[in-house]
Image (spheres, rainbow, N blue to C red):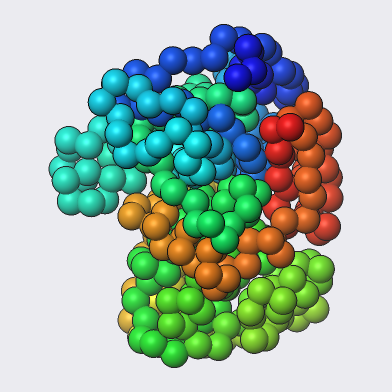
Length: 341
């Protein structure tokens, strides 16, 4: 076992740096995990570049990262679900387990949830971390540790299609062809959706959408207005005020509009008359609940193409370079993976 635990800190001056600390000891019902791979999430890039996302602000140094796979090293007192050596992924939202929402199975709404990497809570860009065993999931044998690190963003897409109301074979629209958008295209298909149209302004990402299973793509930069009534269910995944305002336009009458992305600035001017006139169902997505098993199954059997999502790889020693690449080359990047070598 490595005698030290490297942890990657981000401070409010937008600086990333490694600190060596002692390896943590697992507490009651916790397992000690040796991290293998981490994906860089869009939220990690926001915190790196802007120092904040929504209501979360980087005010003191913290460890980012929440898309992690690893290997069980040790069980703490009372932990017995996994044997040492088991390959696992981490569900980073740890709820209280006792409140009304937890008991209803909507634990993502727990008011006391602790989410790894939401400042000031430390995340998974480290060598070793201790996590409650109930929020750790086994990795299918068919998956590499790099692919398994996509389970967390895939869970967002799975939860989005679980929240949507649609019939089998229904036409879908995905606004945004970033990582979550591409995963939503695949999850919608896996859940029984029919034809999918993906809309974005970056041609490279639209071509990626076609490879991931989209039937049709629209480059919004080449049209004056988005096409109307494209699908019975539409997902906004870009986290953009413009695409959010277009959500009701692209959804067919009687359909379901799903807000997956978090629009920049939080406040969006939308034509509510479109929603009322079409009698749309408008629903939102807050991370995920009860979605990791499905996400890992679909990654494992190929319904979600994890390997094809990975476009760049770095080591933890070169994390600063990895973050800068993700920030400065969005059109060339789907998912950046950092491996702990």
